[in-house]
Image (cartoon, rainbow, N blue to C red; front, side):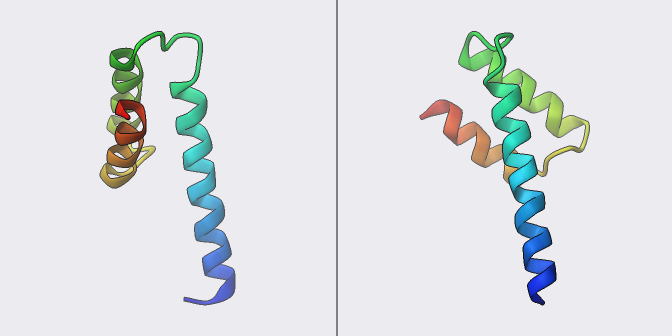
Length: 62
């Protein structure tokens, strides 16, 4: 993978991570259950992959 592709992949992953943090950390998420439900909605829309969902879920539950 070329440097430009690596930079693009890192930037894309950072954007996904930021989106997850923003959604899960929003005032609407008052519990882990609500945070997981929002995360599930994001995955269902196709905005994150199953692997990204799994990693975010682990962060919420730990």
